[in-house]
Image 1 (tube, each protein chain N blue to C red):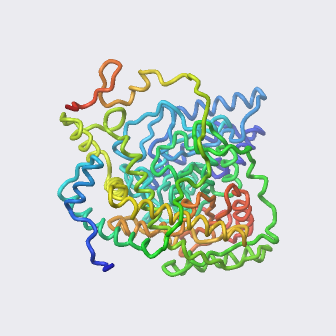
Image 2: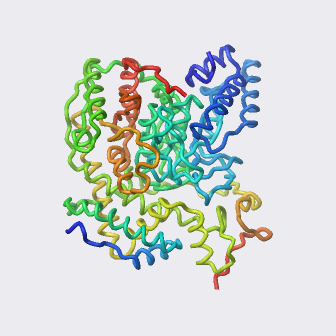
Image 3: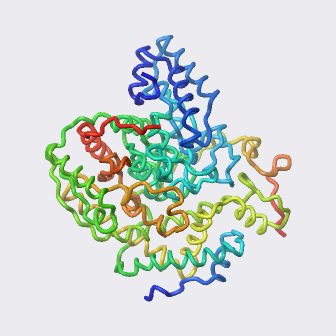
Length: 485
Length: 99
């Protein structure tokens, strides 16, 4: 079998057992990338020479009988808002088009410490602001299941790369659904960790109180494997939580007998595509067949999550993106004028439409006279949402909901209507406001397009969410299905 | 509140964009004014919810005062710190004139 078809764990096992070399694997992925990228456009950059050298180093280690890491020879696609030393990290923005970080993000260091190989940087919505990967300065990524449709966003390149077998693993970031949305649209597994579990050191900030880096893979086991590698305390991120490292592959395979699953009524309510509702309810019955106890749970306050999320995210964005001044790094206008003019022209020329929209609205929400009405109000709503989840978790172990209220839509279908695009995030944002972990996994197909369900767990109970996803995946009728490309 | 209520005028959009040091074209000003009014209409939904006496979530984790030892550690050498500067002069960033 071609190595690119293998999962991450299989690859590292085969390399360790000398059934395959790291070089063969990397070459297989590079040729897969060469043949598919003209169609899919998942990557912003591919690190051709560097990856071969790294693969050869790993092969030497194996040959000499030295210890090799858990991700030995495994190609990992990394979202282009995660810093890679000496490798351009653009946030898919003109303003960072030529930015070369002088350091690696903690997650990248951890992947390399386990002998994983960063094979390329993936496309995304500019500064992670979007749900379709259409706002990228470099142009959109396509959905591998239907090239006329969006892959979701903002980590659309990462999800598409994994779905199209252009990498077995990828990293994304999730501020309001940016891992789970593309995982759902591309038919892969994606996990948003509990806030504070994975270091944000080296993640270029958009709304830092909400976002986490997380793994994407074609199966739950590989997703758990990558989470085990990247999770854990990092003193360089002051919001990192000091907890013992954990192997998330261990809870997989436990049966679901007696597990209490709450099906979120609000998120399967009005406005959700019928095919999605049907698939998620069928998923719930399947979990019941496996011994889980499902019940409907109603959290009415969740219908206020979307405006609260957008106001908080935009406010933080307006502050975080103030660093792009055209002086220390990033794009600077050619015009030689005074400070204010150079500053505002560089930003006019360097940022795309959606980024500008969010900076201005965020500035507005934080400005005198509006702060209480918008920003403070949203933070209070976040408290109510967090409390309602806490209450729900007194009744059930995990919650089940659709990841997205709709099927992958066509390129260009929503991009001219920002509010319509924001509405797509209605099912994913409550999780970020409450800082909870959630995993999105494929729960069905409709007319050849994947549908995702998400399992939401209490803080630091990624193991429970992954356990459900793994159990469902083993029983799913469509197990192992891949897009035809 | 009526749905047709205009929340923000073109002049206000211009002013807020200036606060954010973001120059806009005439076309952008028109478009954003329209879009912001639609978006702010939707955001009004928050007013339906009574949040009297509810504390704001400033941070989802209850972390307070994360300290570390105040030790001198190696920092980025000047040439690396300057490597991404669009303009530099010697060991300095070249900034636009301020006065």
